[in-house]
Image (cartoon, rainbow, N blue to C red; front, side):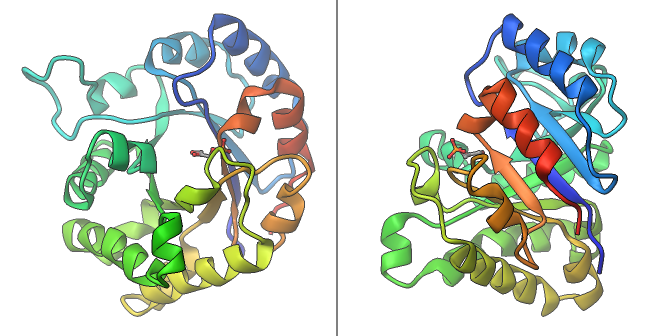
Length: 252
Ligand code: 13P
């Protein structure tokens, strides 16, 4: 199965108008392999400006979070309807920072995934285990427990429109990336888990790896058969490095 390769920039709570300007200018000129898509996810205040600047046909705008409700008395929250007004095509959901710092549960994340799909925004569903969980050999149990509520909420067929990002928590922002072999083995498990529900869908879902991906390690990681691109934090804030990663990545 030929899946598209996807490179996602998660700026987290970083960046400024200058970075919006510099990154969009560079990405508008980047040479991408024809099966590669790039998604840039700045903080909410920058979405509107970025939306007016991005012109490359394979570079899309994404958000870092959203509320599952479409409107109402939810001070400080953002709805899918608002995101749609700024040409947002993707949304990162269930990032480990949202799960650990803001106590988002897998059930709440599943409801957000459903709301995103209902409004035509593609969810980038993040899953991943902590260092302690990996040491205790609980990785597969944890990933299954994070995926199952989403399957229960939206049904396996809807995974046709979902991107999954596997981000081991111990690799995020630590410089300790999973080896290509370790990441591949986990991605293979995720695909098998989905496959137990629907083989055809499992084969189609793009599975991204995230956690200390950079220009040096991206090629070996993305060359693995079940790794279809990456979700990048730190490296996505560096215009030279990020654009280099995007242009060197080959589609599958
Ligand atoms: P780093 O690339 O900085 O490790 O962050 C990964 C991440 O959390 C992307 O969502």
